[in-house]
Image 1: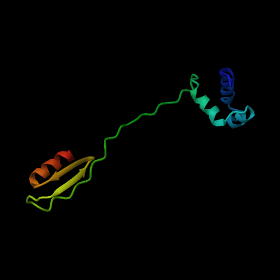
Image 2: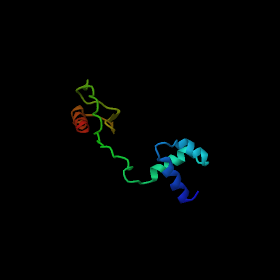
Image 3: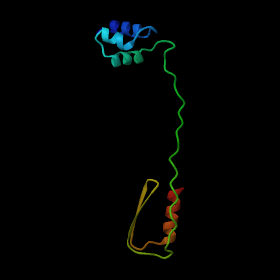
Image 4: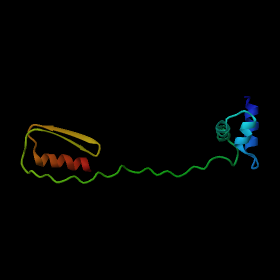
Length: 106
């Protein structure tokens, strides 16, 4: 379909008394395609309004339970908090672990 034909169809479709679906059907064009052409046209006064956008911060992490052991332990530990993963192995000092977790939460 020529550019001129598309422009004519878009012009006709913008008339208040015209059914876009009916117009498209009569001219052998998919109605969604005709609506797409209508969006592509930049007619004065027909430009879509822009909406304000607010960018939200990431949701706060939920509070973690307090440590139940106050002495070093050995083994392997994996902690996932606020999108970060900390893997610990060997002896784990609870005081140092609390410091690391506090930094991750901030």
